[in-house]
Length: 503
Ligand SMILES: [Zn+2]
Image 1 (cartoon, helix red, strand yellow):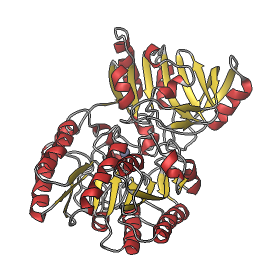
Image 2 (spheres, rainbow, N blue to C red):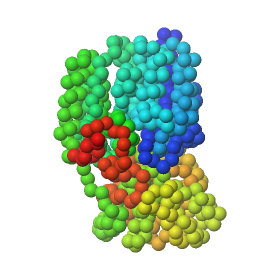
Image 3 (cartoon, rainbow, N blue to C red):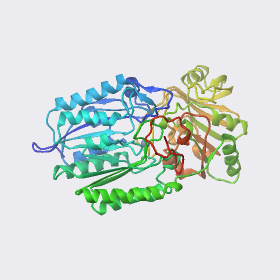
Image 4 (cartoon, helix red, strand yellow):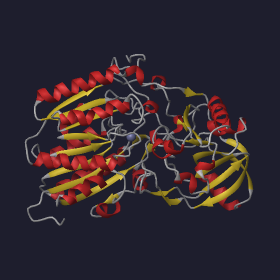
């Protein structure tokens, strides 16, 4: 639909980062320019073309807005791989560009922001709260400001106060990022035709380890099914946020957001959902194996299985701030003599370059990975055979990355005994079968596949997996948040389900 002269005019922007305040490396401006596993930084009208067909919030918002005939004024969109805090320079440059862009765009009928919700900057605990306050100062209190958030957002009272509505993803793996953008556009439409809603915000009194946050299994499967039911009872929109449990500040943790025409209804529905989440506390649980224990279990299971056993190397998940280069699981596979096994991604640009210089078929002595300085981890020194080489450019096909153009740089499949390792020059979470196939590894022909991911891999691997195991090799994203050296959480917050209270 082409916008008419009277069509609503919406300003759009995006700025996404999930911050692990314990992570080894900060996100600087270059990290946002590159995007890591995300699309590159994108400016102005280019956003309307390059973000098309990608599973991100702003893409869904644009599709829904265009279908409604709205006029769109896009400012800037960028994201970086999860990591330690965003540098002051990166935050100020990007927030500055967005805020000045909104000011320069002049009066609009509304503003939509595609944010993550768990951004900490060097100089700010609450990156999104600060950005929203600056945007609000420009647009005034009457212009609707609607935001889509990642399910891992650590929502703060300031974020709630500054936005008309915050809408979180409802799936982990996040297969509904674009759909959440569409829901945000539908919320804008509702807001344009009526008064603002009352808001209810509740913080859940315990952290949930990310390995137990998957929405395809209990208890989240049932809890997330409650959200449409709350809307059927009158909520304009409701969100259950799992939070990102590796951010050392007061508002870390899960929360509930309910927007409704009356305060009484918003409060009632939020309190009901909070009671259900608290009642489910002990069900956020599972088994984490030591590396060799997990590999032996997988090998035993593989003897009779017709499909691969998938192991999550959860503590080096680059989607949670890992560097995707620890070697604990590789060491365990080799030590146990695993056959027909694959592991990825090991991000090691120097090793990838050596493999490219040596060529296919060569045998190389390498000290692979293990360079991010994680306690208990070290490079894996051995002879590797170069099986295949790639420039790392390919299209992701699974439901999580769906449509994203991967740019992993010089890459190789290196083999040691029965173990194939996908080595790349850029890090990205292994959450798509194409991330094995691009170097010639057929996922279905593996006995064991080790993925540096916690939950997102499930979207593309659950359908082909005989079983899924979680293993904890040394890495920066501790599977149990209670083991993290928190100093600044709010008093009384339980560090894990039924775990010790902070303070
Ligand atoms: Zn997330």
